[in-house]
Image 1: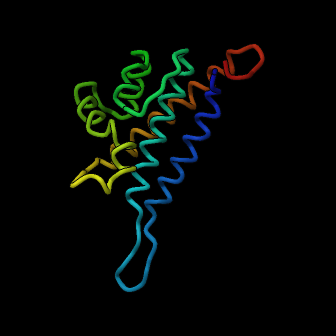
Image 2: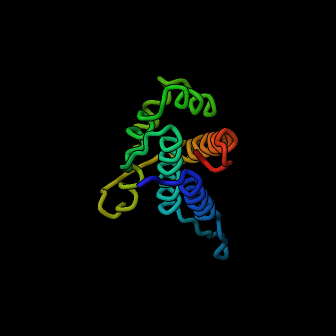
Length: 152
């Protein structure tokens, strides 16, 4: 089954928006506030997964799985380089960062099973933005280059 990269990106955008809302600080009164960091991590990780899958679909290599490192490595080298550039990171600095969050979607959905776990939420947020921006840019390019104007 062929997937529409625009629909993948639209779904990723919804999860990214949900991640942002989960990180909003809601005052509870006094000096207390509420944030939802677990859903924020899960939604950011899933948005990244979907953006990477949209890029892979646009490159003609649809993929499955949740491992962000594995999905990223399947991207064509020019796409990986653009994402590195958007993050202002070289490949050597990027590799351990993505490896550390590669399984965030699965691990954080089941956080209650883990004894202790950490994640670089700032990196997840930045990677989601970089991958999302690149997916949107590629979609626009694909839409303009296809004769019907539909994503190709």
